[in-house]
Image 1 (cartoon, helix red, strand yellow):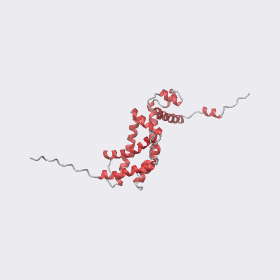
Image 2 (cartoon, helix red, strand yellow):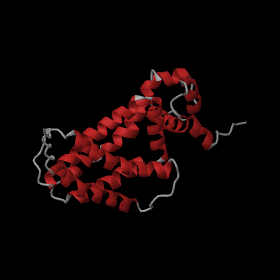
Image 3 (tube, one colour):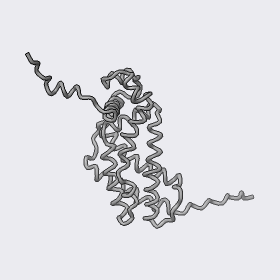
Image 4 (cartoon, helix red, strand yellow):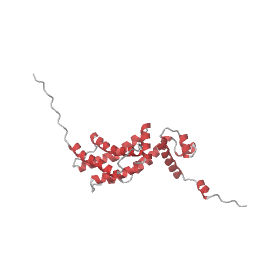
Length: 228
């Protein structure tokens, strides 16, 4: 008597993934794991979560640090490569329009519970992910925004933003970031119109930037001579 072929569902399970697909699957599942459990677990727990053996996991990622770096690359770096540099530096458009469009798109990427939880977990654990990402944001985003703001305000270009300019940009950027933390981590009430929130923050930042940076430093008072 001939045997019946296995059902389609069983045959689908038997399908072997290519090495590249397997690697992407590991990274996707590891991202979920890290966002839920943090970075404290060992590779044994991680392999169990992935449904594979430790030796198979090590074939693709020799250490947990290697896997964390790949999560960082796919979750944090790849989304930044979306033409945002060209958008920010397109001086044919008003700077406010450029920044509004940029932050609308940027927050669409980072405002997820998974993204924010991994970022906060890595900061608490003291991992390099936060330091790497902060460096990328400062060099690739904030320094560029400062140059464009200086140009818009008619100020001379500088090869490197000043410490004061960097802090102003971080205060503005961090306020938008913390909106996402309040909404997706703390689940606190927020203004649901995200675009309006970004627009309001932009108005405050742009109004203050030119006045603060262009204002001449206050003259130092001459020392008062004692009388008598």
